[in-house]
Image (tube, rainbow, N blue to C red; front, side, top):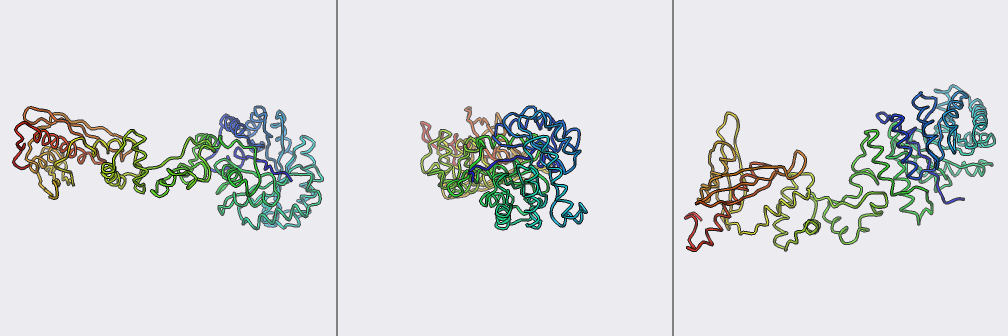
Length: 515
């Protein structure tokens, strides 16, 4: 038995049937070209009888794709098969995929046919499709809930009629992996002419088991798996191509199976489908989700910095993602923070890193994600080249269109804390006056500017100011997600510069009696 698994991609047919995933003809052609680059063996371009748009899409894809088998779905109806062939006839490797339900629940309630009628219909239309093309696939819809001996009977008959692929669909995602694997094995062992065909599976994800069922199927002898990019499809979707392929790739030593997929094209293909359909991939989606190669927990980041294999069983590059990402958030540790500062050009000593880490954790409690610009602002704000006589502790502001702006500021000096309040023309003015009262240095604000350091509504605001004192000008800066707090920090930064300059003056005297 071959160790290669054929990847049959049905993104353009079953995937596109999902609500909100419709694509135009041009979009389908663009997606088909990328699927060809990805290296899928077969792509089901659409359901030609479904609409003029689907017919045109199948026709365009059939003309343009040269390295993959191109197929169209068709019911066991001659009109469907004729329409499929009309769309496919320009393909280099055309395939007609015809199907009929085989479970008793479908026969009774949907088809209103007997098993004998279904078998006769299947054979007739496989034979009819065979006159058009060598590659004919027959699917037993709802095989997962069908009587297994009837499945064997109908598969044997359609193979004799010319089917080159027989497909075992778990149409409603009902099967459990062990059960589905046994079903595939039973069919292989009890269909006498099974060696003339390829056994395929088509699993849905209603119980979240589509990929697991597909893996169980190939472990039991199936050699074609029908998948979609990002797992899109009817209801909960189909088996995810990227998850199935990377499972085989990553566990190749165990399963000893491979595919022709160029895995480095996976992420690009996933992104293209998202752009074309607007169907966003969840962040924690395996392989292609935003968090798939992102690490925030400090223990994980520490392991990743020492050896990436501690927390990654595959490399991001293997699926086309440039690199892993150490996401800095409230769960990150000092090691990862120090590494990121080093990458940004800041080689912080132990004390400076500890100071930066404290500011980082406070900011991380306010923001979901910390950007590099946030870290630079922390360094510039906290790792100062001058000793700070007063350190900022907290601020509380009351303000409004009909309220007198009032600010209460708490500062610390050595082991002491000082708190005072003041009113002003606005909350920033009130905060500066409260700082004046605590420090005893009445600076005059001469320049004030603010800008967002990072993106988003929770962006870090940076305030740059100039404060005049005794005919000299001193710069100050502060950063916070709260612009009033950033303003108070910037003003205090300038006041500390004034105090430091006074302590270094020739007289050696204090700048203020209060200092």
